[in-house]
Amino acid sequence: MTNGLTWIGAHAHTATPVPGMRGGISLTLARGIDPDEFLINLGADLDQLAARTPLAELRSQPTPPGHDPTRYAYAMYGSEGEWTYVLENDHAATWATGFRRVPSMRPGPGEDILCASRNLYSPPAAILHVEGDEVIRRAEFGTTTGHESALDAALTAAGAVFPSIPDATADEVTAYYEQHGARLPTLVFTALGAYTGLSIDQDAAQAGNLPAVHLLTP
Image 1 (spheres, one colour):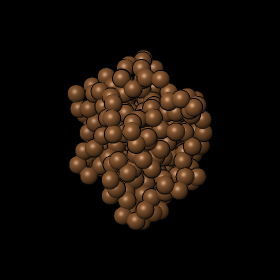
Image 2 (cartoon, one colour; image 1 turned 90 degrees about the vertical axis):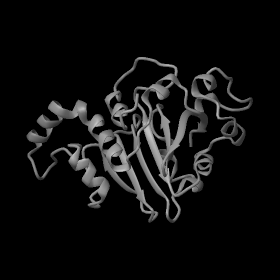
Image 3 (cartoon, one colour; image 1 turned 120 degrees about the vertical axis):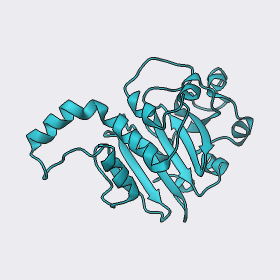
Image 4 (cartoon, helix red, strand yellow; image 1 turned 60 degrees about the vertical axis):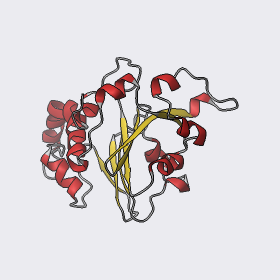
């Protein structure tokens, strides 16, 4: 089964466990950088990365000796076209929480990064976008980056940009979110799929058949 990235948003609130990932996924995409290099920058272990172990198998393995298991997040990854993708269903995307503190995560010249992070411990969910210029632009789910970029156009076209003050009254904004807010992750990930042209196989992701690594939480 492949249907762009829409399924990630459609299962944003799904809690049913699967061997891999289905509900509450954060997604980080990168291009203009070698896939393995990007994962190493995120904190992936070299040996683990070389092993290409599927997530369903990695989950059954013990945490390496001397490491705190509470600081490890599972990440599945892959590449399609120009894009490297990283899927995580912990509280947030590792890149989103780490780029300010970890020098290796900071974008370099010519590197595009697009990250949709759940931010459960520090809501709201947000999109972070770098277009090769090392500038990190941010949009909460329901808004645009304000950069009038192709990404902003895709978010608008998908209906992922909700009314906001002062363009609407507080009551109108509240009413709109109450009526349509549950669909917002679906609309956002539909827009991300349209912008990137990327499709990630839902069946492979939820079965845990994609290669995986531990990422050390910053």
